[in-house]
Image 1 (cartoon, rainbow, N blue to C red):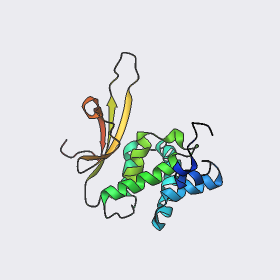
Image 2 (image 1 turned 90 degrees about the horizontal axis):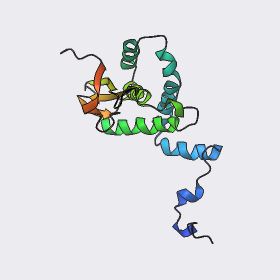
Image 3 (image 1 turned 90 degrees about the vertical axis):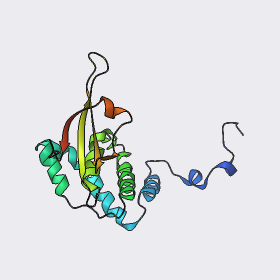
Length: 177
């Protein structure tokens, strides 16, 4: 026995039974981890359809119009914001790990997905877009987006970015100016 191999007794049952990722059995095993209750199936399908369509929806309409449509869309009711965040993230990740969606895995699509499906209850939910200034001359600007609920970042803000970022747009706009 080679030194690099783990003895069978040390491997977990999941490691022993997990099929290769993109075989039908492997896909079923991974989706079984993402789908934890019956309502997750319908929500996962809606999120997958959304991830497929939203980049095309951005082309013909202005960003404020798209965000207004997302804001007005019905959301699955949630009793707990933290649990809803985890659920959406789990189902979204299942799609974004598929090879044909990997190129779409960025903060903008994730932000749009949370803004579309997260139920903030009666709280104020906003989307923020910022530009990160270039660190060196000639470097491209980097944009970022995230979601806040009642002014608290719930998803999407990279660590340490808040101090360096320059806000360019918030939706819905802050009435205070």
